Length: 313
Image (cartoon, one colour):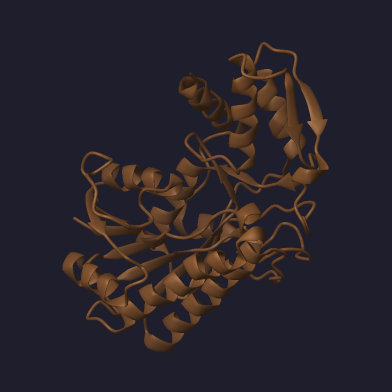
């Protein structure tokens, strides 16, 4: 039985990855910042303090995982603009501690580390569809922090013989994603209107932007396959390859409601340095592992809407 350690296990993506691995016969350890009861049946919980190098190294040696999925970090582009220092501390500095803990332990050369980056590393200027060989020019602090992680991961892998793969997921969505992300924000506002908590108006930012959306359940399947079949010191996109406007996302979510909802554009919700359109190619991943997204965008959006509907009250 393969043993997996997931950092940031209690987060949105972590919980889906835990379920995926357990369903595929893995022994799963979830790293969290404090000792707490298992929040998913079958999960082993271990406290990991990324401000303490010895704590991280001790946890790794005690668990002796076959694979580490490094999900821990600050995940919001919007939040990164107002919290640059925190974003770099959480994303870059904590990753360095993890890399050093592996490098300076008996796990070096044995454990495979899946480093989680972002399509935000590419930024503006890349030819479409975006491939792993495309130029990187991130346009926000979050993207810069993730690109720094990618560079470090590849440097450590090449220089120290560590088995590291860097994944670049594009926008991933699904039920349970916190507020601050577009689909959750829209769905929550619509459900609040249905629940009589506000006027039938929804306030939005720039609806013209187009993005590549993939359901989180397909994303975590890609992470597992990268461990099982991915090649060390390589970078892999995980994406649908389909470009969808934010306006279409909103239109679909509104269609699930029986209310007549007015859409109001709020300039205060626009992001600085916003890239108008991007979508990626996951051919490298598909050719190596056979991965393809299985959950349609409409299905994913309906699940998100129903999640917030069940949360109301």
